[in-house]
Structure formats: structure tokens, C-alpha cells
Image (cartoon, rainbow, N blue to C red):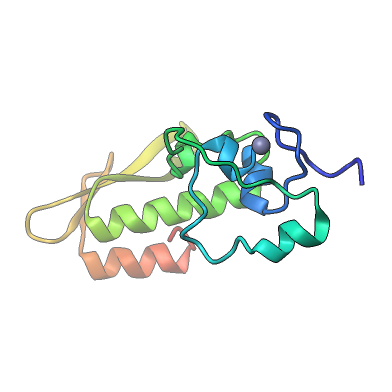
Length: 142
Ligand SMILES: [Zn+2]
């Protein structure tokens, strides 16, 4: 039992993976869970040591990946988050980085063009939205 990860604020045992990643229960982190259906009263009742619901007026912690403490995120999680960010950037048509160009480790960046295509930097190559999407999916960048 004692190896269970605990909230660094109130020391209660953390149950949800997101709490474990954060190192804090939702209430101590100031994140509202009351709207979600994932937190059930029966979990708290059955264990008696689950994170207690406490009324809190704390400011909500943003759930963006950059705001989370990253020390507990596995490489796989980080990779997945980056992929997700990249996919969103692509869909919203904002510039995004797509790995490094070897051997000089220059960042490969795609910037959206007004005509709907993308410019690859630093090469300056212009790629259509569809072609880039195909490429990104093929190499699992998105
Ligand atoms: Zn706590």
C-alpha cells in the first residue's frame, strides 16, 4: 500500500493516472473534476483513502502539456503529446516543428501559406496541404 503515489500536498493516495502524473490530486491542483463522470463517489467510499473532495477556490491548473510537470511523463507520453500538438497545429494552420534535420540538427519547420499550402523551412520547398498530411501520417508525425 505504501508504494502508492501520494498527493504532495495532502498526502492522500492518488488514484487517477492524471493525478499521478501531476503529483497532486485534482482538488489540490485546483482542477475541477465535478463535471467529469470519471470521479465516482464509490471509489472514495470503497477505499477510504482516495483523494478527498474538498471545496476549493483555487485557480484551475491549465491542462496544456507545457504546463504539467514533465518529470513523471514517460517518453511515450511526451511523444504522444507532441504528435497531438503537431496535429492540432497542422489542422489550425499555424507553424509547427517537425523534428530535426541531420546532421546539423536544424529544426524542420512548416509554415502555412495563404494559398493553403505549406512551406518547408529551411529548404523553402512548398508542399500542398494534402501532400503534407499524407507525409505526416506516413511517418507518424501526426
Ligand atoms: Zn491532495
